[in-house]
Image (cartoon, rainbow over all chains, first blue to last red; front, side):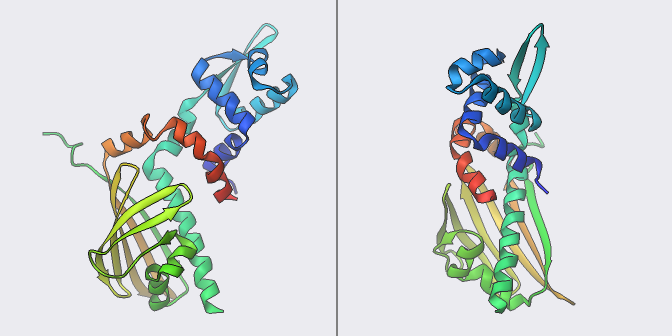
Length: 107
Length: 136
């Protein structure tokens, strides 16, 4: 089962998506049209990327007339920037690898 | 007097392994085995020995603080502005070994240093690809 961290990491793994998210972080609220002009991909592609970012809780959308405005939710990254929660996840995964190694040492 | 200046936090992971303490001890103290589950390293099981753990994202400076074969191992763990101590405790159990890892010494200001501009946003994003590759 993917953890919230995994979902955020996967959402930001794609360079285009990460670019869109960074642009929203730096430039504040923007429309799909505005983001498309800077992204170098088609508007449907940008909309799709925004959908993934929204699912991961990284952006919020606001409808106004025919336009949808997007803003970045930087606070969604807080768990990743928190040392203790990040290290907990790190050690859990190291323990998994340790367990794998111990099993291989049996053979 | 402030409480926060001395307040530190710890990360504790505990797990029961179906393996004997001596085997787990080898995995925790032999460099080629440590490399299999943690990171590349030049670990030597001697108190005061300084060693480096090297990952694809950077390195961790360590020093062996305590060694009690098959029972306890502690080393300092300094990376990216963090100064902490990792302590391993092995306790024999009916089914194998209970392993406890505590990483102690996270001060609130260290946390801020990590989350701040220096090691935060830009570097974090730049490293995401590698981090994701490791999750897969």
